[in-house]
Length: 532
Picture 1 (cartoon, rainbow, N blue to C red):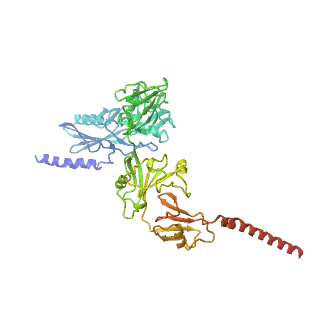
Picture 2 (cartoon, rainbow, N blue to C red; picture 1 turned 180 degrees about the horizontal axis):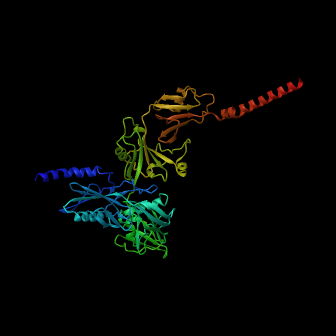
Picture 3 (cartoon, helix red, strand yellow; picture 1 turned 120 degrees about the vertical axis):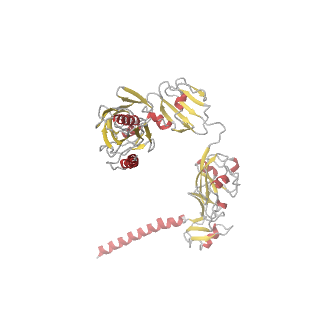
């Protein structure tokens, strides 16, 4: 009785020592472990379903996959895989078993075990049960994979680097295609990624890598196996899809022989505004089009068919509008076209800060067609042009912008449109003067004063000022609005240009006179030297 107590006490210590590397190098890719004993075979899952696998045993130059985890139910055992086997007894026994080219592994004192081309899960079960069956006393058997095989495979067809390549055994089909195609997938319009030919021995399987990418079908992205052959054929039958498609994007995609509309569309994610009851298919062979609903998806697609996913009628679009300046949380926010108001968006963004000047808050809108509610007769509606006095018609013709001042329009009634921007400037108490004045700088804002007042505060015009072309600008973010000289607001910039006559005098006449004088001086000097 005492001996049994000691034995049961040291067993956990032995097991702990095994898994902390006391008996040699750390075990790689441990994964779910099998224990075979008197009670049968049990699975202990000490990790996730995708067991991380380091690659310290991988040969130099091997191309590592993007996802180097092992799925124990999908990874197939082959030549080069190495197992670590521990039998927990007193004393314990440890074995290392490598799989050979015939798919068998030799275990000392146990013999040969056939485990080639079966899953990692099944291989561990076979090893654990076989070892346990030949032992005199019921024992716990632990099996784990400590080294993965390499796989030399042939890749041909529509890739940049066809030929034989060596990969880690944990590499999957998608990783291999990317590795031999400069890190990119071949174009779906040119390479048939939906029927990749995969030959393993005498077996040929077609894999759809787009189904893996866009539907999450892991069965379409297998692990590579030594000696396998991959061929990517050119696309022979395409269809074009457009409209309210979210992912993958609109474009040409290959179709399988006999593939129905429903089967093809199952690969796509639509926008939430898509009308799936009015899917339009144009058939160029018959120069006609048909409309299909969700109950009519058995239509068999043909080469060059064009599929359109329309937007639901009377469905407002969902877009984003940018708000910046003195607002709680600047950035992009979703709006419903012609439904979300400027006030709602300002509230959504956390409201104005204490430093905000709401009297100068504006909506900046790209001019497409000016709505009636913002007609040219509305006050303070100006195109954002660097030139003074440009008209609404000029702005519309040049794809310019319109400024809608929220102080003049109820922010609850200004409905936002795609491309709008809201700018809430910081409170400013100065007006800025630059150019041909005696004392350029910042001067306190005085309500109701025009540009001439601030110029007088700056000491008046300088002698070279162009008094007839005074410019007044307001800045809203990265855009500048030209305003009338009588409409000076806080933060406004007054620019007094240099007169054209002064430019001619300083840039043309004076240099010319200087050149003439220099020429005359040189001529006089030459004459004087000649006479001497």
